[in-house]
Length: 381
Image (cartoon, rainbow, N blue to C red; front, side, top):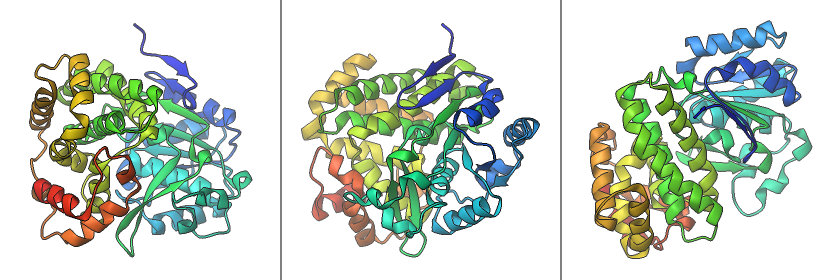
């Protein structure tokens, strides 16, 4: 079976090894003539980034780079990116990297033509309609990890550095015009990043699948995404050069992000404030929280998780699925508690308040209250 394809769901996706070579053509398809490549500091000096800039330069598109992007990008990064975009006279963005580079790249393309401040576009009600849609610059997205799926998303997660809160900024035109999913770009990911990002994809699939909202298309995609993670994340972790495993994980990441249109839940509701306050790796935080959240939601999800276990070939129904998650985390070196990933002396009241105000809360199958969310957080700690 060839792992090369062109898809148009939810946007144009060029999938396959070596397809970064099409970056200039992807820019042309998005009507970008002077792109700004936005990525994080860690990727800025890596060979995959330099090669992509070479491809753009060779095609006459320049080699403009902005890499002042924090692991949890914030409004300061956004302001600096917008300034670089305007100063360079750019007409589009190549968002390149993991979740941080992709999220900030999309945000810069969105904000560069707006007159209102960033927080006016938070994902609350119809606030997205405040934006001038015609002023949003086109985006080409190139993921270099297999986790967030931000390349097929209509939002960016941005940290407010003043309040230490993660906020979701949404607009339908955040969805990139063209995506290049080239699994060769993920070969250099170290094992701990492979694990954390892969489990982020798994968390997206699990939470979307368990969300009580009605969306059968997302439900099916979430279930198959779980299967791909189960089959291929251990392989990608054991051998980073396993291109078949890398490709399937890249698919699982995009599937998880597409599926969570159905909703997320308590895993993300907790991990967002924890990440904002303690700067933990998002996917790893999700993985640490998942076992406790499964137990928290058990009364509402025992049936659907039993169905998932059957599909995935896991014996023992709900309990068997939970045992599988525990074993998967352990095999990928994931700590068992938040304290082990740096959440020390936490402000529990603040994290609980942050979780309850997070948009993910509304998709959890069990209603989250101040009392039960506090108990859930203590279980994760």
